[in-house]
Length: 368
Ligand code: KG4
Ligand code: ZN
Image 1 (cartoon, rainbow, N blue to C red):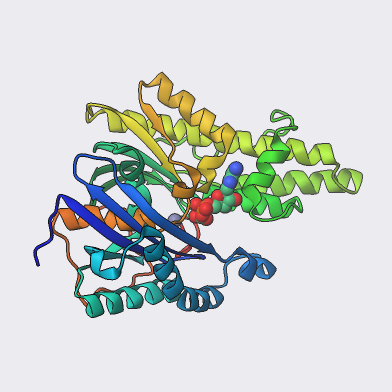
Image 2 (cartoon, rainbow, N blue to C red):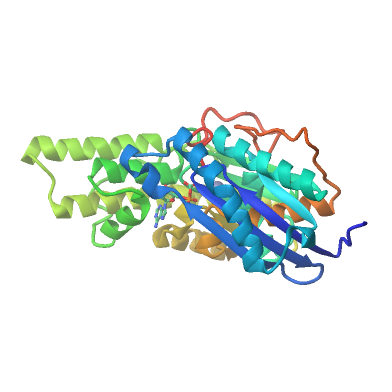
């Protein structure tokens, strides 16, 4: 039976890090896509004792939970698999055990139902989210800022992304998490550091602004984290410990440095993007760090100064979810992409295949 391309209903499956997720998305051409269901089962509690995501534990949990998530997503959408036009699954990048679990399940569903299979790049899922939420037109500028990734991309088409720059070491969320650890704050560190920073003096500690002296849009956050460690140790050496106010001031100084670096690099990325003279210039952000109010404000200010629309999808769609995978599947399907039973799970899968490989790009294979 030929599928009517004007109305597409896809199920998306996501299992590349520590969220097991399934979602049903419907798109009627000319209207905004509808998320009919979005189930996300996190694994924070399973990994809490280990201070990070343990790949084997994650893979086992995905294998145990994926079936249930898919059933729930279909039930919440009020649909059966036979009502679905295609099955989209994250085929990388990510922790390979989890990606494999998802890809195998999707292949089974596709083989059993005869529905088309579409492999999706997890990062493309994030990068296409502003089209799911706001119907944003290409080309737009995208900043991915999460615990696993940090990069500027120009999104030109569902499978065409041009990377302008990215982190050469840690991702900003990773830096927030490490700073929280250094200051004995619980994980995930970002929201805790932000909280502390609200009552801190951002000027007391002169933390570095890494890579601002170099042209281009690449970023670095690991030196900043080391500067925080040195500041903490200097206080301990001097007074035998750090006070509550010291901690707030360190957090405020660190956050101000991250915001300043992201703002300046965003300004440069926008300048490159504007050379293309897009009709309705826009910058969209995705990733957990986009939840940070100070960082968001800094980015909004830069956008306003350059006449660029600023978009931040709701947090549940900025962080890992399967609606973005279903949507990216619909986008790929519309341009004719189809995958077969030879679809492979990939631990690494850069979005911009033409860009030079990065020295580092946040946690390898971790979630974006
Ligand atoms: O996108 P996400 O949920 O998953 C990853 O890709 O990791 O992002 C999580 C990251 C964590 O590192 C977390 O500390 C950071 O985003 N984060 C924040 C804030 N909320 C979450 N960082 C700074 N400020 C926040 N308010
Ligand atoms: Zn992600």
